[in-house]
Image (tube, rainbow, N blue to C red; front, side):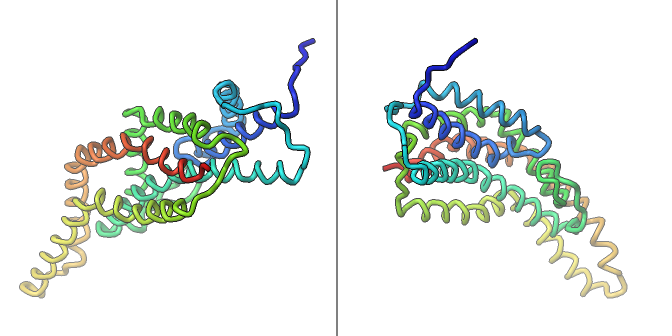
Length: 260
């Protein structure tokens, strides 16, 4: 029978590592999908925690005898993992918002599909751009930077040593505001084309009052929107690739604001 000779401090250290990794996996894009079984996520978190345990520089002989103090640090580790995962998720939220803007201008605002990741209704263009961004995310190996940032988080903020700085809230608010900037940049080609099309149909309605502009404009907008969307996809892929290359740096910057 295998006997594990582990001290209380070692068990507590592994537990907080597991909780931080689990919080990230359950919040971060791709891994947060409800189509991924819970057992797989838990098994992946356990495996990653076992790999990270030798890397974590901590005096594992130190243990918390006070239960309330240990519970406080457990909550702090979960909060740190959620912040890391949400930092990536907010970028994808901007991509989904770009699809919603474009779909609204094209007249596809009510064309919703079921999102398998969240089991919620989502505009069809928002779902398309979200899946497209995830494919670019995986194709450019951006998820490797994500795991590197996870490992780096234990060097910058070891377990039981979280100290939130005031600039963290400013950084999180800046990332939240950046959602709209990303949405405008990604959705700009379709939005601009639809704006020009609306102006053209407005002038046409004044010139030819007999024409039913509402009936004619809807299919034209959809066709033009899809054309400009297909033309802009290579540029969107290049923009996402450039942004994903800075993903690890941005995550490390956020993590450093939670260190002492």
